[in-house]
Length: 145
Length: 287
Ligand code: SF4
Figure (cartoon, rainbow over the protein chains, first blue to last red):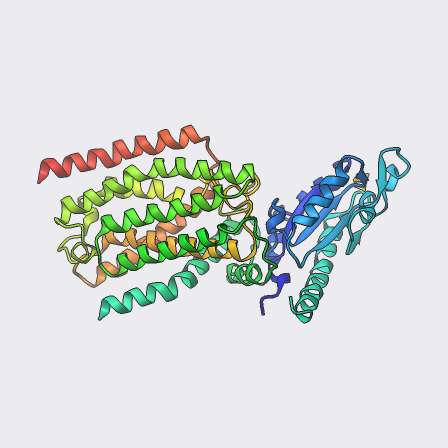
């Protein structure tokens, strides 16, 4: 009952991506991939989101924003890092303003590699994130919150 | 007796019916865009999830104000289904909306505040026509009472087709459909994050959604008033017409883009004046 995974709402944030991955994220909403069939809505509002989908590595300007977005999301929540930049920093890793992957700032639950990550693998990543989401919800219930 | 049953049925079933219509709406929209779309019961899953999420309260009045929005809408709907005064129902309906506006402007998010002021603007756009509809019912049936209106020998729509067209036009605002979804949108069409509901999450948002379901059924109830008369088959006709109106609103939502607030205000007032005003004028001269 009341499984979070039945209605996961997405928040998509571009931490410092080259926009390649962002376009692929938006591709998932098109008729061909149609992520709404899983009940997924791309909401844009951290207060209402369950999954934080981040593309691109963390730089000194977006670090604060990512922290804030994550802290505004109500539990249970999961983070999906989309694209190799978001996973490790990718080709931008050595740049002077790049801190590295998303996990240098907030905990990441699912890593989706690829440059750019393909829509199929993004959907796979989100579906994998749903299992994590359910596990987190169960854990929250057990701890009596 | 029948009135008590109707009121109870409204209070108990309206959220379920509203949620089902919402699910249907999402499927129809998806099919219009050649997508598969979510399950019919998606709104129930959404509500279940929202209730199970951690409660983040931005202040200590928002939840209370949203509850008031819900309760006052329930009262307005119950009065309509009890056959009470239509004018009163419409006034209570606007009061309920005021609570939603207060809930949105109680937090500090600029997006929510912008949504609140746009919601107020929307009220200005549809309110004149809603009042004209009530006056139209009075002129055709000689009473503001819903109980009298539904027992008229001929359907009210015969005398007030212009008002029906106007009401269909402005109902898009109430249903939060494109092109009039300025304050917050029913689907995930983002412009200013989520507008009115930006800082609502979990239970607070769920309560607001349930209230919107009550409102949806209430509006369809008013649509029915146009068609129902003393014969039994008029009820069937009314429900069929409501289905058609529902489909047309969904279609309109999918083929139009959001307008600017000035266009909203002017177009609603022009429709009110032309379709509503002329209709009322003819009724007044006729009587
Ligand atoms: S992974 Fe590739 S496509 Fe994606 S943001 Fe990095 S460089 Fe761009």
